[in-house]
Image 1 (cartoon, rainbow, N blue to C red):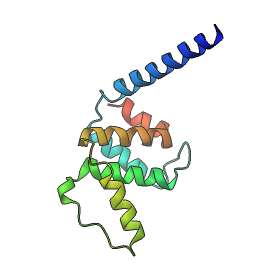
Image 2 (image 1 turned 90 degrees about the vertical axis):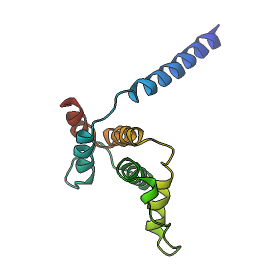
Image 3 (image 1 turned 120 degrees about the vertical axis):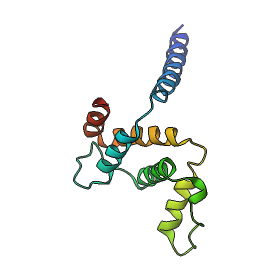
Amino acid sequence: PHHCSQLRSFLLTSYESKLLTATRHTMTVSEEAFQKIATLVGDKSTPVARASTRAEKLKLYGLYKRATVESDQRPARPGMFNIDGRLKWDAWAAEDKLSKEEARQEYVDLAKELIGKPVEDVLASE
């Protein structure tokens, strides 16, 4: 009996998670809100909810580039001695499967997780 309630709880949590993901991605972020949030992310004086990891910074970079530049405008991959350039190029290429709108939404979702209230304030003013 106990394991049934655990399973039910897990399934509900899994279902709720999918539901939240589905609803989160149905609302689209306007270009204006996206640009305001990108400015917050780029501003070193913006207070943060938590420090971002190198992987999160690269993810933000890739999502930003996907949301703002056509993939066919991406230059050739930098040479092997340009490690930072290659990491950024790879982060951008990794987001090719997303539409510009999906990339904007994922960027905003990650920015909201990292920065918190300032991002929420921009979204609330929409």
